[in-house]
Length: 219
Image 1 (spheres, helix red, strand yellow):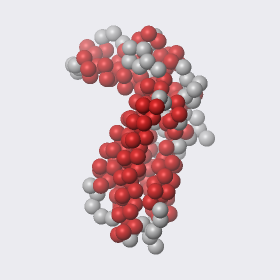
Image 2: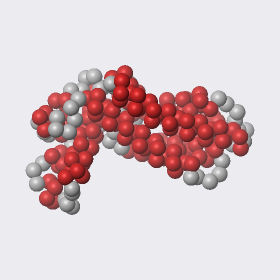
Image 3: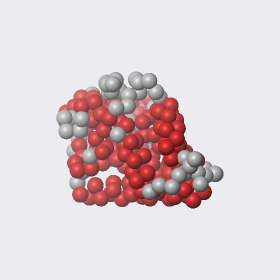
Image 4: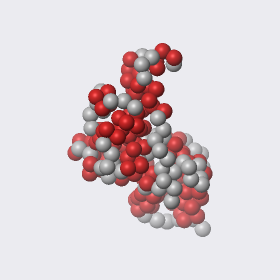
């Protein structure tokens, strides 16, 4: 199985003196958010390569080419980074669900649209990490917020599955378990997927949807 590639240092420029001067003018808040996003992306890649528990704040600072003191201006701890990665994935899920519900046609068509969009965007983002299956490392308040968002997306997906069962495009099944099976498979993708591998995120998404349809389509 191919290993994850070494971390890209694309976020370093955001921390270099004068970097903002050669780009378009940013507001102070936009500059800070850009730098914070660079931190999150570098951290997620480090988690992917080394594992959450084995990655230190020093490792993340080194990947960005900054001091740990500079890093602490944007994040204070690893659990904060992981929490923000979860929130990024949640935002991708909300967008994919909104787009899926706008697709005309059957419940199966909407379900396929969701996973095609979500998988591609999730794997193309810098925030997907194997650590994002481990809620226990988050604080109780962080965990509660993430579970609330996850449940909202799951509820939307169950409604789509139930719509497909009702319109005859999805075979009769327990919608809850169908969604758990599908999302469980997707959540583990960052633990084995590599952009250096055989399939692009778009190709993997298409393959996943084809397999899903073969298993859930009404005969």
